[in-house]
Image (cartoon, rainbow, N blue to C red; front, side):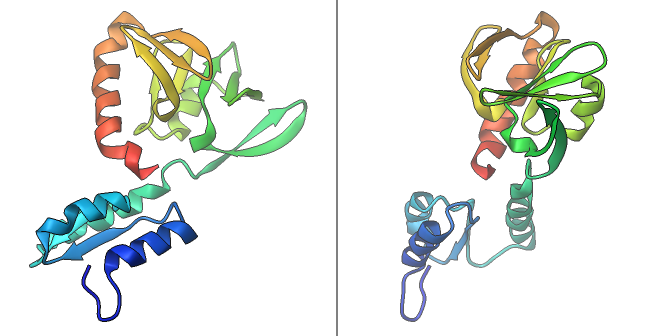
Length: 179
């Protein structure tokens, strides 16, 4: 945070203006500055003296930011498209193919739900029932065993509700800020 000519928080603000998705790790001997680190959305705040494990954890967290940037091939109106996994709202299973919903657009891929699920990042995708896999980052509302995503209401199956709640909480606490 303390630099020769500028303050690290000011530099963090400039970085945010130039590149809002940049992942910032703050390191300082001034623990009282942690609130400033939150204001610039730092993903970690480390204090001196650094512990090897703390540095490793911070770098690991920064490397996880690439989740969802992988692209997959889909078809929309017989046109081949490549979409980022992070943009998928949900995937709906049909016999022998899936419909991939991105906002209000529907694309098709000739693959089973089981197969496409393997290519989705389990840190933010969850299969709520036999028919749907959803992007937890795009959930609009949750009420009991129902979720709303991309304007659609879906039911989380009874046998998956406890696991869904656990995964959603983990996603919310650990991964949402990385997206």
